[in-house]
Amino acid sequence: MATAGAPVEMHEVGTVFAPLPPDAEEGAEPEPLPGYHVVLVTRDPLPGAWQAAALSAAPPGMPLFAGIPYGTVAASVPLSISRRQLLLELLERGLITAEEAEAAATVGAVPAKVAAVFDRLPPEQAIAARITWASMIEALRSDPLVPMLAAAEGKDDTYVDAVFASAAAR
Image (cartoon, rainbow, N blue to C red; front, side, top):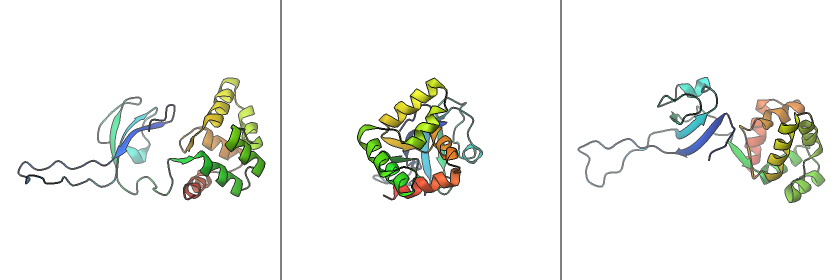
């Protein structure tokens, strides 16, 4: 799934298989390599934890093939959650009211605390944020609005990871 504008765009996620040896029997199945294997594009240089996993070299903005061993990226924190999962989690945590959750789910209304953060953005970023909220199908953990909204509530990355992990279980 490509996520335009995100620091890391995941274009393909899947399993890579080891090549079969030349003397492999007919019908032999290749062995899957362990870990996550992705084709990604970054706006910035790769974070340190991912640099060691790069299986090819590419400057920011160009496709890069990476093999990321299991455990390198916390599997318990999803890259995205659905709009429904997000709204239910925010409601359960008391970050939005039931009325705000229902309005957000039915007509894309922006909850008051979220709107307050959007109002502090420069006009072109504010309208983009409102459009993103109203048309959101899924919330991306990598979206720059996520840490901004968390900070407005005095929350850190650990809290956001817990929100995404808990919401994904719904």
